[in-house]
Image (cartoon, rainbow, N blue to C red; front, top):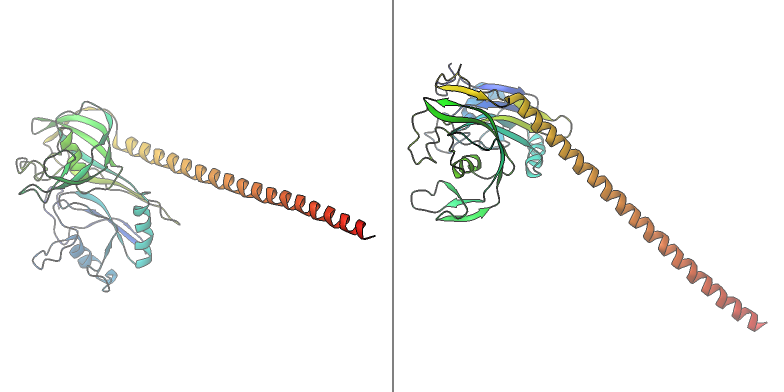
Length: 311
């Protein structure tokens, strides 16, 4: 099946498979799961179709999805095959030790090549937009929370004649629709984002957002998967790169190295904290022994004085 064609039950791309996890390359415009009886085509249904023997009937959906991807987003999606594996992955996501990076094509040419987008995001309570999120300060924005996204420009080019930029996005927090809202906030909405263009950007065959990198630092065997790059002229001839700044592979390698350095720094700081705590405890024990010795000397002198007086 061509990459630009809609999803089907048979069209499931498996990137990684072990006794504990499956990582699939989720198709664009498909839900992960659904309680609606009429929603026949989901990732859950694809997994049941391809791996019926792996479904866990003690769960509602049959498979434990470790994280979420929007309906319109494609890319690496991790599924745990047992309760213990799901717990391990959950702890990594909870502790924010998971590294994710997305490829996107955004409208316009992004001038700042490397930047951190820092906009608090909340739920949009405006009439007709309750399914959307918005940045703090927007009318109707409820309960905004801090939110950061790293952005790195990969290529400048044209899509169907319009200026666009291919970027790599690294979510540093995990808010609903974070990447889509942040890109819109800087005036460079994701190409084909029907929702956040209020229905105006409907020409591309899909929304150009793809979960490319997924690294979960599991205790015994870290999981590292890259889900290809669908935004190339071979897949979509409407995309015409004109100037390349950095490659996807080099950028991903830099992200992983930065994360490894950060993890080493955190471990060293923890070791130093433990060392200082142990030194403090040893100092307290030594001080207590010294105080005890002085007290013993005083008692001994008192006893000697009493004994001398009695003689």
